[in-house]
Image (cartoon, rainbow, N blue to C red; front, side, top):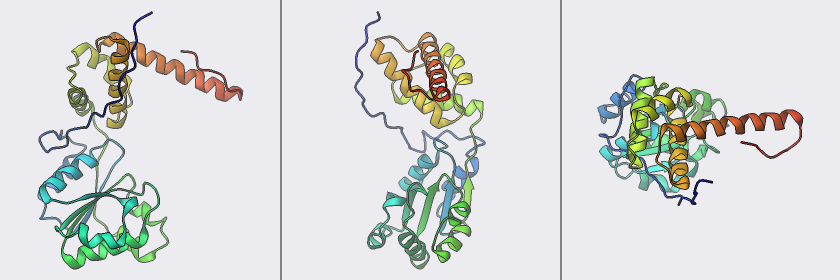
Length: 244
């Protein structure tokens, strides 16, 4: 049996500077908007896109350029808003993930207009869709009017470039055989690609093996077997252990 060790679950932070951002057709409009600051068409803007589409990276670029603090939308508190806007800009991340603090958000949009500040909001759902779920009619109206830019799905060239960056963030230089095998077989999203790169890295460390096409093949086959076993367990209505 191959030697296996328990890998340390150390954080691998993505580098989120402008130089590390990979531009492409899916994010061109959003990048142009961020780089146009402070000459925006409105005081408050929203970046809309799925997990891993680059919203947080673009928000980090904006925060670096503007000096804006970055806060989660679910943690907004009305009393903290004047201090957060003191520098003239703010990033609110993940609007709609969890309960929307309606009173604080409405107060924030008012303050942004009154103080001439800049607000960047990131969200997976369009503000118009979020507005339909809110109890505060005035806030819903504000969100429907919020200018937005949407990040699209990455193409194959973009996924390849992102894969190289994700491996590089872990001090890994993948060979061409690994990339050629991996990219057609993983979920075509940056979030899915990030997950598989992390899993490959953990498995290589645990098995004390180099990260190769062969290891990727073993891992993806095991994933497929696990998925089939889970489906069989669900269909039979009987919980049973996964066999991989």
